Amino acid sequence: MPELLKKSYRDELVTWIGRTCRFRLLYKISRDGCSAQTFHQKCDSQGPTVTILYNTNNTIFGGYFSESWNSNGSYIVDESAFLFRLQYNGVSNPLHFPIKRSNVDYTYNKGYDYRESYAGYGAGNCGPFYGNGNIESFSGVIKGSRNYFPLNGSVSGLGNTYNLNGQNCNSITNNNLQVTDLEVYKVENGAAVLTILDKPWRDHAEWSEKKMTELKDALVAYKPAEEADVRAANILLLGQIGAGKSTFFNSVNSIFRGRITSKACSGSFEHSVTTMYRQYKIKTSSGNFLNFRLCDTRGFEEEFSMDMQEMSFILDGNIPDRYQFNPMVPVSSDTPGIMKNTDLDHKIHCVAFVIDASTADVMPDKVYKQMKDLQINMNQRGLPQIVLLTKPDK
Ligand SMILES: Nc1nc2c(ncn2[C@@H]2O[C@H](COP(=O)(O)OP(=O)(O)OP(=O)(O)O)[C@@H](O)[C@H]2O)c(=O)[nH]1
Ligand SMILES: [Mg+2]
Image 1 (cartoon, protein in one colour):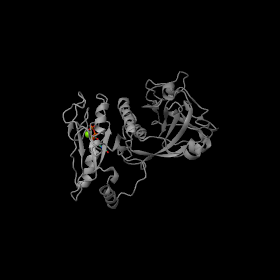
Image 2: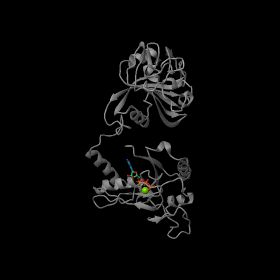
Image 3: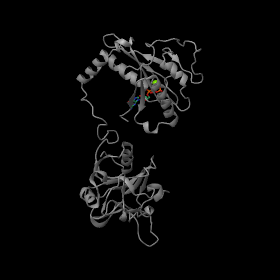
């Protein structure tokens, strides 16, 4: 059962907690079973924790204590406690609700004092419990159904103890305690959690000079299939503006040149930085060229859609190297310089969709649609396509 808490949400929590820290999973109902006893066995006396509930509306919310959970049947006094919402109905929308402080006189109308003295409650038969009964997740043991755990607790009156800044129980929790999971993380002291991933995002080879030489040799040795009768494979880099298409070519070129090169213009701008179609060849240290070319083109953007006819010209190899794009006047068969009756040598043989990993989940609909439409066109041509993920460091 993988941890569900996304890196971006961890970073948000770190900001609210206000110090560098990292999260270690203590308890997860889909892994450990939904039982108050197990929760306390794993989470009591552990110091600061965050509890996160994932409900069936795709809303993610929970609470933070700087103090430990207990099973004593006593209130948890915590001036630093807060509740939060990370996502609402599937949309990322982080909000932070600090505990009401006693220097502000919040007195509940029954004359009962709801302040940091009532940040939460520890009792052996209860799961995570915030406020004075405001988020009571569950008690006893909950049997999961096929897709979710119907928690038997309740959410009410969150604003009595926590400052909801205009939100309410419904807009934080959908008043829905049917959860696909509930996780409790221990908040540990730790440095640089904002910049380093908690664990590698994929298994990879041991990076060494030897491995790099092996990879370079494999690329130098690459030749298109003899029966194809083409000199080099043309690989088209396609993707949203700023995805890192031009930078990818610069990186590959730098590796083979043995020094930093920046032949392709790269950077960030509201429109595509690349305005010219380029078919880049890559020279090796022995002076020969690799048997593939990286073809760089302008990026997809919301304002100027990629013209499908223009794309077809690129795929068919009709557009010459250094062709200057003009989004206002898409290319046509009458455009000066357009090559007619091209052969397989000029066509695109593989398309790499370059996707910025740090913004993939917020790709604009218009850009996504352009890529999908193009994919249909490419599938019809039987063109191999791959995804090239950039910016995993972000
Ligand atoms: N952190 C990080 N930044 C990257 C990475 N790849 C590219 N960038 C940066 O992203 C920005 C955009 O990169 P470009 O290569 O110009 O992107 P592009 O896809 O060619 O963009 P257009 O030509 O505008 O369509 C530049 O500032 C790069 O330095 C990466 O892997 N990590
Ligand atoms: Mg570019």
